[in-house]
Length: 67
Image (cartoon, rainbow, N blue to C red; front, top):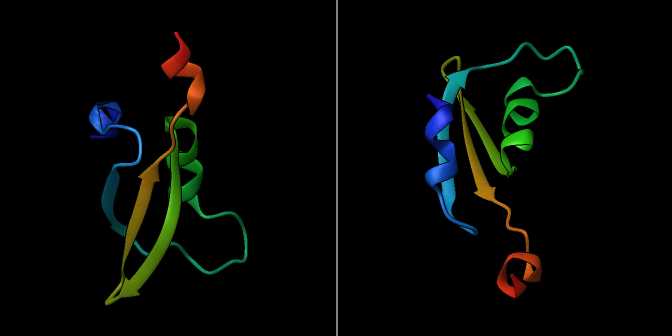
Protein backbone atom coordinates (compact mmCIF):
# COMPACT_ATOMS: atom_id res chain seq x y z
CA UNK A 1 0.00 0.00 0.00
CA UNK A 2 2.90 2.38 0.61
CA UNK A 3 4.07 2.19 -2.99
CA UNK A 4 1.73 5.11 -3.70
CA UNK A 5 3.08 7.03 -0.69
CA UNK A 6 5.18 9.20 -2.97
CA UNK A 7 2.00 10.92 -4.18
CA UNK A 8 1.98 12.94 -0.94
CA UNK A 9 3.69 16.23 -1.64
CA UNK A 10 6.43 17.84 0.42
CA UNK A 11 5.14 18.82 3.86
CA UNK A 12 2.04 16.63 3.49
CA UNK A 13 0.89 14.19 6.14
CA UNK A 14 0.41 10.44 5.90
CA UNK A 15 -1.61 8.61 8.57
CA UNK A 16 -0.89 4.90 8.90
CA UNK A 17 -2.59 2.31 11.08
CA UNK A 18 -0.59 -0.80 11.97
CA UNK A 19 -0.56 -3.53 14.60
CA UNK A 20 1.13 -2.29 17.75
CA UNK A 21 4.80 -3.27 17.72
CA UNK A 22 6.04 -5.33 20.63
CA UNK A 23 7.77 -3.11 23.16
CA UNK A 24 11.17 -4.78 23.03
CA UNK A 25 12.96 -1.45 23.08
CA UNK A 26 14.28 -1.89 19.55
CA UNK A 27 13.69 0.35 16.55
CA UNK A 28 10.12 1.05 15.56
CA UNK A 29 9.38 -1.04 12.45
CA UNK A 30 6.89 1.47 10.98
CA UNK A 31 9.34 4.36 11.36
CA UNK A 32 12.04 2.23 9.76
CA UNK A 33 9.68 1.55 6.84
CA UNK A 34 8.55 5.17 6.39
CA UNK A 35 11.96 6.83 6.67
CA UNK A 36 13.40 5.53 3.35
CA UNK A 37 10.20 6.68 1.65
CA UNK A 38 10.88 10.26 2.75
CA UNK A 39 8.67 10.46 5.85
CA UNK A 40 9.44 11.45 9.41
CA UNK A 41 7.12 10.05 12.09
CA UNK A 42 5.89 12.99 14.15
CA UNK A 43 3.55 11.14 16.49
CA UNK A 44 2.59 7.59 17.42
CA UNK A 45 -0.63 6.77 19.24
CA UNK A 46 -1.41 3.31 20.59
CA UNK A 47 -4.82 2.01 21.60
CA UNK A 48 -6.51 -1.40 21.64
CA UNK A 49 -3.60 -3.25 20.05
CA UNK A 50 -3.20 -0.81 17.14
CA UNK A 51 -0.71 1.95 16.50
CA UNK A 52 -1.55 5.10 14.55
CA UNK A 53 1.42 6.88 12.99
CA UNK A 54 1.31 10.47 11.83
CA UNK A 55 4.21 11.06 9.46
CA UNK A 56 5.19 14.15 7.49
CA UNK A 57 6.73 13.97 4.02
CA UNK A 58 10.13 15.59 4.05
CA UNK A 59 11.20 17.57 1.04
CA UNK A 60 14.40 18.24 -0.74
CA UNK A 61 14.31 21.84 0.39
CA UNK A 62 15.71 24.42 -2.00
CA UNK A 63 17.50 21.75 -4.05
CA UNK A 64 14.43 20.86 -6.08
CA UNK A 65 13.32 24.49 -6.36
CA UNK A 66 16.64 25.48 -7.91
CA UNK A 67 16.38 22.88 -10.65
